[in-house]
Length: 353
Image (tube, rainbow, N blue to C red):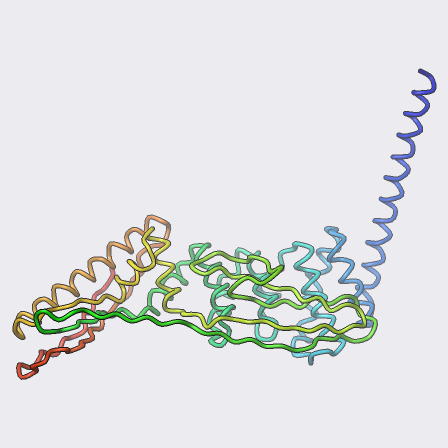
């Protein structure tokens, strides 16, 4: 019994010694990261940020956040420069550490560092305005998708009104003779891919480059769910090495995705919701007056359907916006005899409230 007790005491003492040693090592690493972050040399500051991102110390997290304030002057640094490499490490450290960087500190980087900025902005509940600005960058499809998905999840009223105003509401009337058959068509999207090589200045820590994606690749991270999910990829450039980079993005159908948000909010299928906003009606010609009357009834029914959908969305937390909507009629005249001219259909404008 004495021998067992002695063994147990020895184990406890060893565990305490190891714990104390680990605590000492952790404190030393935190002190080292603080010292390196305070350096005037970009190489040392980068190593400090790299360590801070992985130590998960509250003191270091605050230092990382403050670094964004002074680093704003570097936002236009050329690729592969020391300043660029430091910024890349800083963004990665903030993402890895899990800190929330206030959106005002991220704003200076929004143009040139949009992908990591959006990843960090997704953590800040007060970043809606920044996300709306990022969404407005017309050429970046994945950025538009990610920002839109996040804003939808947050029930942003400003995003909701903007998304609704951007939908083309149409009603296509196909006019044909009796016994004519209806036709249908389909289309598909494309995409683009790019390849390159990434390398960083000598001696820098591993640098992680982030890119937003509109469909998942191997190892990609889900960022925000939506009608189409948004992801981000991580390309790690090891110290003193270069790696190949490449990414592909599909040609997003923004109109279909805009409508897709309303499909999710109304618990309807994408096809049913698309038919509500971009309705098609087949009319067998029985005179101009009959055509005009049936077209008016069809657009009135479409308006009522849109109003009903928005009321369902209101139950999910999206207030019906105060705005004007317009249904634009389109006519496809397939009659064999067009002697009796079709009347010109006016747009149907209606106020939501």
